[in-house]
Image (cartoon, rainbow, N blue to C red; front, top):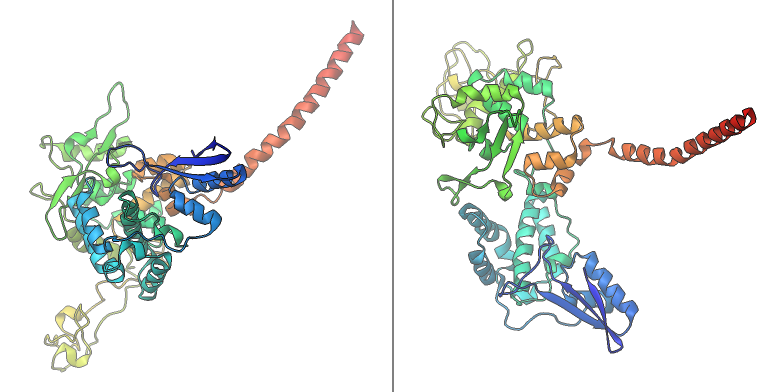
Length: 480
């Protein structure tokens, strides 16, 4: 916390500087970086202390002074490097990110940040510049989740510039931009799509039974795809006398060393290793997958023990099953093409298009006005009936990641505390869990109000009991 120290009739306010995440900023020698500012009156010193603490000690002394006295004419430091030059220096010095993350940051900067700020000296970038850049991105149609990721990268880079003493304030913190916490989750969907449990069981039956253990694992552990497909045999912990419940260790995940590069096994997202208790039913489903495998072998793998590729699984397994689950045998989706005896020519002559929307040059199927590949329902077409055995999605598919959201939804519906849910999902902070799933706890406020109301009513009950006790004592006295 910030401290006030009287000094010869003046008041010095000092605090240890932190970054936007509340972590201590240290100098080149590894010692905490301190900020201090001196005031003529204790009232001003207290105000400065409150401002510093209100911003979790992430503001510099100059920022606190500007908040009280108004901004000075020029805070830019002479001869500061351009953002592009500093970004390369900063990114090259970060030690706790994977090569894939480094490549992703480079692409983010190149595609979304460099054109706006790359040639500008660090000291000349203002909050107005950042705000205008955010608004331009929105006007171009960028999602708020995407803008959040880019904004966060820019803010981290400028935080590092403060630590390197290139600038003394971060213009990102002077904007009114509100970060979207869902950008910190796996995919950052604008809406949370989850299955009701009955819908999940309905969908699961559309898959080949060999995929059921993987689907159940994703749904009942909430693991990310990259984590579930990286689970090895030694990560499935059988029950014992000391620990009667089976457990699953989520210790690693598939990573990329760069864009388009081969995948490798690395740490989980945010380095959040966790051990999850699972039910016996899921454990019994996993046991057959361990037979004949040695330590280090993947539990969920291809026919030759290789990693299950997400893209192949989605397009060849997941998506067809999703479409089938949304089709009703009694109310099939509309057909493409119609029968016209004797018609000749090419599919494009009658409006036929391929998967890319371009005219299809294939010959017509005999007796149809479409080629053989374009007869029947569109591959993604679904029924629009209300039959009970047909899956209905209010939020678009979302892929297997939807099972992670479903797991969280089911836990909240059963009253599992948010902190437990957050830890099982491997979220970096409880704030992320609250931002994504807070709407799933509609009764929390009512429960809090009821609990507090119950506390107020308790003394009145005790008073009545005390009066009854007094009456009983008086009656006893009379009897004696």
